Image (cartoon, rainbow, N blue to C red; front, side, top):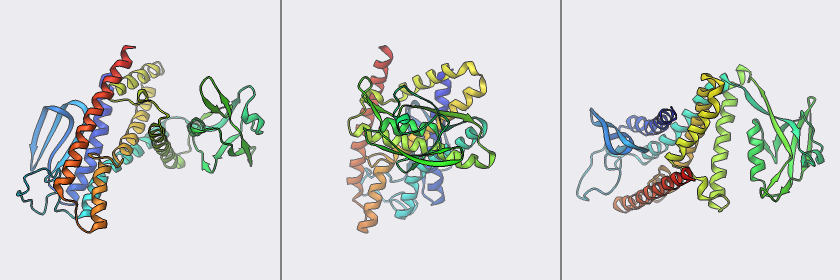
Length: 348
């Protein structure tokens, strides 16, 4: 069952991403040669009009292929006005941004469904630990955390996220108690065993979101995953997260399986809502990752388009194509390493 759920999630994530590229390309009259999901050998294909649609064997990505996009064709080959390189630079920018944008839109739509049909975990202090830093700061059980260091809080997980990234600095807390707001400064306590700082609170109060507030709270949900993704990337770059914290397709199957096993006893609706929440996380993650300024990714391709905007002329297509080719090879090599690492984690 977990494999089926993973395939559905993978299909949804990649399909919506590539659909974003596809629809924006069509809106700008750019020819799409192929639209495929997966990599490797073709399992199914269908030619419709000028586009070939296909599903491939390996669940590690997909693509929307535009005429003349890769820049590695014969230099003498000429393309008409509907080819990617001959489109207006701002049309190309819109097409490249369309994939990640559709990931964010998909996350938002699903978040509305989840928030409307499940309990929200409000940032209310439900308990204090022994020798709590929060107690020293005057916080009490029942207080609602309004903001931390100027960052507004709407979800209990946001408190946990900020606490996890704290490196010992004092935290300015705005809280609400009995309808009145107060401000205090909290100095987190260091725990040598886990090598991190703690606020010393348990946080979370389950309740329904009022119908009129479903859309704003759905946005807060998506925003939380956006923050979690880029902050995790920052830790990875700083070397504060190990390679073992990175998961590929095999790791995703494990995450889906673990989540399904935990939620299954609570019934079908709980499984569906929990899996949809996972789709929100992964969709935001995919959108953010694709916007990274790395060759072969949408973000890397966008860099070349913005260089063209600044210079007033494009970077030579063969040079750009070579950069993306090298980036793609390195990306595939990284994917292989991640898969091997995932498998080794399963075996331990």
